[in-house]
Length: 171
Image (cartoon, rainbow, N blue to C red):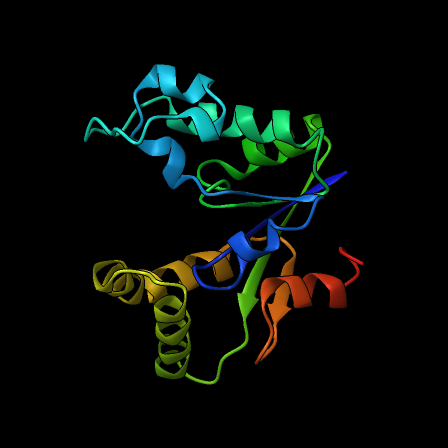
């Protein structure tokens, strides 16, 4: 069974994908490409965006997750639990997928923002991208905490890979 793991930026989703059995499937890669680009493998997709959200992006994203789940033990995802919980649960069951949310432990939102900003700068994120994450982080955390799915705690000083090893999802 493939485990889908969702988390906030800078927790190590992309870094985790360097493992053979892990794939990072950030939904941003699917949101604004022309419809026909969804059918191409990610490395062959042109970098052109049409500037408009593609209304089919979510179905295309979920279909690609299902395809890739045949090859990977862990797939990191974003925004996949959007919508009706019963439909999402049925989709998980139909495709033999498990879903977890990995969130960092933190004492204060300001402290977490400081850590995320530092990690984002270390990985070369733009100041515009960092500002976007800082602005939206409280809302994202609240949304994830409200979702009724198993949570994985990313402890202070850990990245996602460390947490997945600690809870036994990865060796």
